[in-house]
Length: 189
Image (cartoon, rainbow, N blue to C red; front, side, top):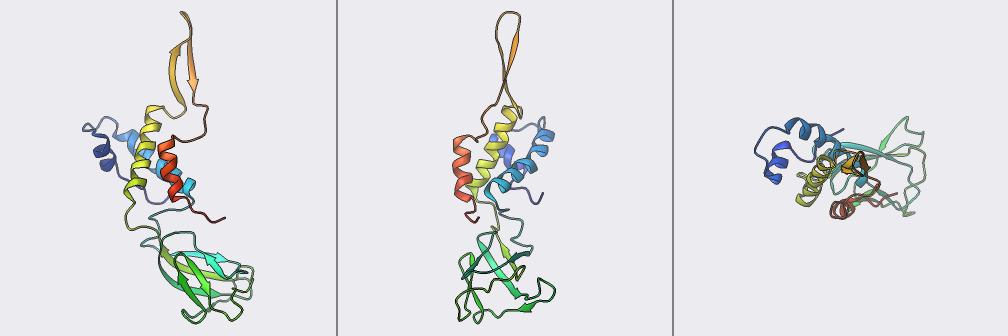
């Protein structure tokens, strides 16, 4: 699942909770909310800031888009012409250069040759610490889950002798949470 985007203590401080009554529920929801945010935004944010990530590309374009942004450091770019059986290290500033969150080809043709499983990029990316607005949106999502008891929104009296359960029908997030997640959503295909 990777690293959680916030801690129980951060959540309790954010919500002004002083008791330990809901610690178990909070602890079980934190990794789920964190994973939801990572899946929705198509990136992990902090998992690969200190641990290297290896990505593969087929090339065919002038640049290779890296998934874990912002890119902190590219440690190597390698090329394979035999489907990943052997690798040749490409030289930085001769064969490639980092431009923001992309690897740009410096080949005379201007593109990375199209090769199946042809490029292996080792790099560090993401944030050293989770951005505060993203952390707040995740904590608000945890509160939303707690308040809505996962799937059941509320019970209400339908008449004198019956009770009706109203299920959450919408698959969309609350607008204030979705706005923040959308700011951090990766825009690669």
